[in-house]
Amino acid sequence: MPNQLFRLSIRTPDGQFIARYSSKGLAELKFPSFDRRRRGNESQISSTSSKPVRDSSRRLLPVPIRILRWHRAVEAGLKNSLAGRKPKNLPPLDLAGTEFQKRVWNAMRKISAGRTKSYGEIAHAIGKPKAVRAVGGACGANPVPIFVPCHRVLAANNKIGGFSSGLDWKRMLLAREGIKFQPPSAG
DNA sequence: AGGCTCATGACTC
DNA sequence: GAGTCATGAGCCT
Image (cartoon, rainbow, N blue to C red; front, side):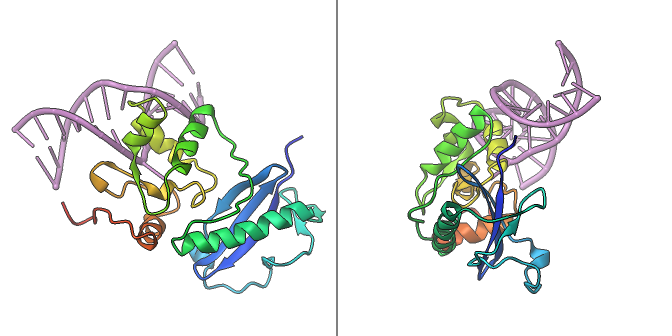
């Protein structure tokens, strides 16, 4: 049977994020959709609620205390990250992907706040210097953006590259870490 | 197995 | 700066 996933939300000044947890840790983090940023929270689960939540198969399940603890850590860590600071005491991440993707994600996690690497540098770091495009693909498949800092991976010559959740997010995250990149009109 | 599609990079004008 | 091409991996059929 597939691992049960618990879905909990996090309210931030930048909108409502969604976190999904497996029994092994944080499995997914979703950016707010811009459509919902101005909407009320009538049917949303409060980030601090201990109410039962609906799982992916719509069953009503109590949230294990361990996951609630993880969630509080994720909440705090996300707020730090959104302010451009390093998150502390993050729970384990349960990253599902191919071996190649996990190597890319692991390499990305070694980029500290305020620093960047290029797709080519990541490719080199995992011992596949020519797999630059594949690195881009793995970045896009990252299930836990921000904590696995795909926004710190730029294209060559400090160009912005891409971002699966929208370049506006990437630009904002980089700016809050004080990272300079090539503006789109320059060059 | 073959044929795409890429969040690239390096090279040419 | 716009083409163009090699390239590895992933996802189809």
